[in-house]
Amino acid sequence: MMQGLNFLDTKITNFINSIILHNPFFDYFFSFFSLKGNSIFIWVLLIIIALILEERKNPGIQKRDIIFVTTFLLSFFATSMLVTFVLKNIFQRPRPFFPTSNFQLQTANCPKDFSFPSGHASAAFAAATVITAFDKKRKWLYFLVAILISLSRIYLGCHYFFDVVGGGFVGFTISYVILHLLPRFEESI
Image 1 (tube, one colour):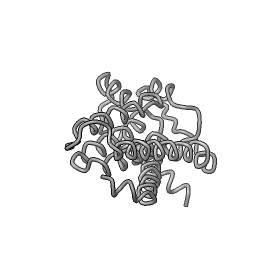
Image 2 (tube, rainbow, N blue to C red; image 1 turned 60 degrees about the horizontal axis):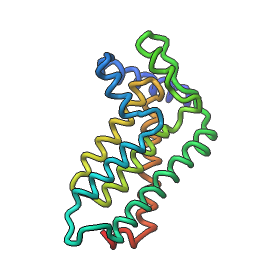
Image 3 (tube, one colour; image 1 turned 60 degrees about the vertical axis):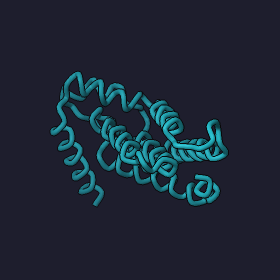
Image 4 (cartoon, rainbow, N blue to C red; image 1 turned 135 degrees about the horizontal axis):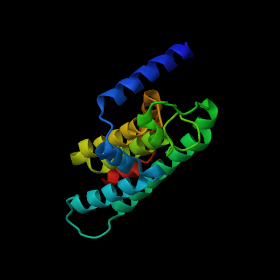
């Protein structure tokens, strides 16, 4: 059964990589969204934009802003720690290896830890879920960024398709649970 899943996963991953052009523009574009493990900077920028664009009657920092940022950090780091230190070590799935010349440069920049689940995808979907709870008007933007971060991991040859799907599911689920365990957050929005 696992062999069949790995075969399907490889086929889907190869298909995705065959429909996206591999050229310097996309190399730069997807490298930006991966940021070599520092995708939190993208989310901090989006949080600042969300806080600026949020319509409010009282300017300045509000209690709900503090709760929002605290919830974001709790969700982002809980997800990252669970994936990096627990789940990757349980599953111990090797990272993909693509012997074609298109991926030699990209895979050289991949982390050396295990592949499943994707830490980038889990953190991206955790972040998008929390920010969407705060700013529902632009949820399409937040989830688009999460999808682009996840897709960048496939494009760069660092993950298989199921790695990013699993990571996205973990990130979404953890944020969803945290958001529902903190009812004051929802009431303050």
